[in-house]
Length: 287
Image (cartoon, rainbow, N blue to C red; front, side, top):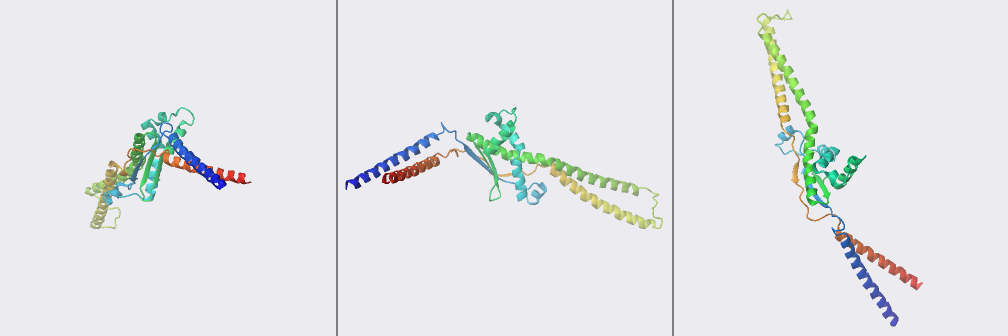
């Protein structure tokens, strides 16, 4: 009887120490992860849809065209480019903020590594693009995410402008060449004593064929002029910008450290270890 009471007392004593220790561990970890000790990270996220790149395609779909998978992947590459990272760093003075000396060898690479660790850009299951940023400053996290979205449009416009200019010059040269050819033919019509190269053709027949050729040139000129004006107008119009579904807002709660989760995990680990030690101790005593 006394032996059973003593065993019950030991079990109660162990349970009491287990509860006290687990609670103490929970509180300790919760206090150690407080903002005064561990600087919290805040996360802001912007969601966008990538538009069709060509304005003419946007026009055909009444301005609501969405980009294909290839265009989405290309836009993500722009958002992840070092060119965007450098622009972002200059805009917000991130080298000074992260205490990186850009004059040291590898300074720029270290800055990019830190920025990439805090920036996450990925395609969602709904074919939108998520741009999320983590920072110790909630306002800065939101500002960085929104600026990444804006810079993506700016860099895309700049990258494609050279090719758009080349297309414009090509369309203009085709139009001007055909216009010069038509002007030359019109000048030939004004010659009173025009002589046909082919002496076997009668003059009326030659005039008829020349008239047909002239009309054909007019049709080609009209088509080239139309293409030229479309390309010219497209060049004067900015590329479609990303559809911002949800701009990044200022977070009110940090995403790191997860204080309750870490504290609960520490409580569980302490409990498991204590129970394991108690089982081993009893086995040793019985042996």
